[in-house]
Length: 368
Image (cartoon, rainbow, N blue to C red; front, side, top):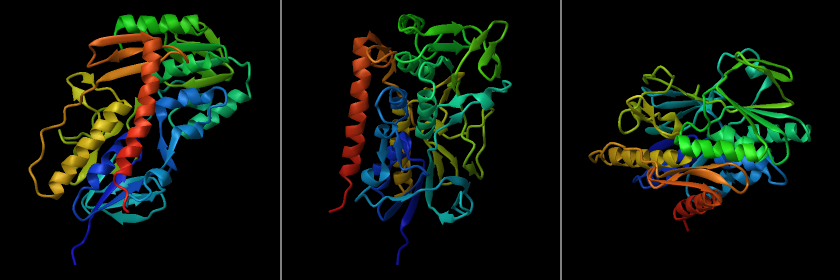
């Protein structure tokens, strides 16, 4: 009797879920999803969940509902090691599971630079669980001073959302906010945050963090009651992948099809796309495209077909929320800048469309 082709997806984020429809097209395939959480965490939506009556749970799509009837088996555990030579996964309980193909799509970790006191005092913001803990901390400081470290996409969105309820200071080591946007759009973003009451400090990195204060390099101390760290992303620490080479930032080095070791692929934020010195955006949109591409690469390999053309990441837009009513960004391959009410509305529409799209894609796989 023929043995089923067993495909494992490690991580149920944007890339992992996007891979499932393609993997389920493998003839005789058996698809398993390994993720310790209860559902897909819609990370770009989480800043809004910190304010008012919006619940964090509303921004998590339950796997039980998404995967019902698809045949995908969800394992609620984290994978800590991928043994490519033996084709085995090892999870955090020590259990080993066999695979024929695996996609590692675990996202990234929070980057913690060696700043004294930073990790001890700052709240990370990288998961729904982080959002839940932070929401409780904010509720305990109803009029407290909030300090956000990091002026990238997440830091700016956090500062804008929280400025409705709390006095917020945003600190960024670089000379400007939003380095992924052009200078003019970044300048608009700063102006809108300032009008919303955010005190923006740029050009000075954090030198030290103590209880209740942050000291900027060569500058003054900034007081805080709640300090949120959104200062960057780091390569995922787990799972360890046997046979994979790593770059100087710790990311597994992939070929143009996402393969990092025999029968082992990466997708999403775990696949760092480089074009010379430039690094591609680590966004939900890019992760979704990665997951679809890698699933097709595996399907072709499993069927003995020739590989497709190499993956060319294509970012069709980037939208940043500045407050509940305004945003900034660009659409149509960096060709059309957008800002204000229109940009914020576009982002809300994108959020709603994604929920419908992922449900529709997985819904078509349900078995009668």
